[in-house]
Length: 115
Image (cartoon, rainbow, N blue to C red; front, side, top):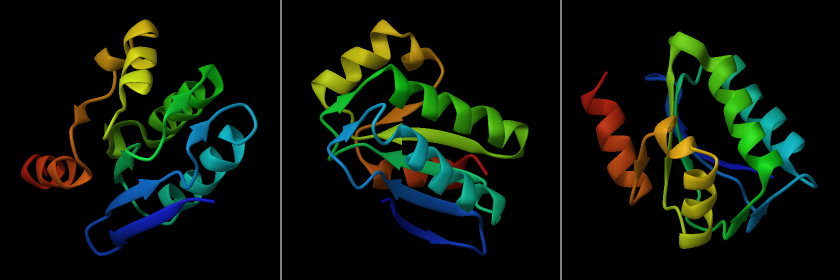
């Protein structure tokens, strides 16, 4: 389901959900796929939501679960939030939890600079 672009050597990567909707129908498989990356050593992730136009509470829950799993060992940021997704992040106050960037490239730069 997900698409991953990264370098295992530095533990940094970009994850694309591979769907335009992150909902109860696919949030668990998305979370499981990303957990596999975390368990394999990827500790700093950009979740690129530029091709996602809708996220429900299950999608938000999956992101929070990933953040809890990675804990202090790494960092998860989001990028490319559409107006609808950005609104959901504001309503759920996740905009205060996740750092957000306009593009995946900008997020990747920020993660490298903060290393």
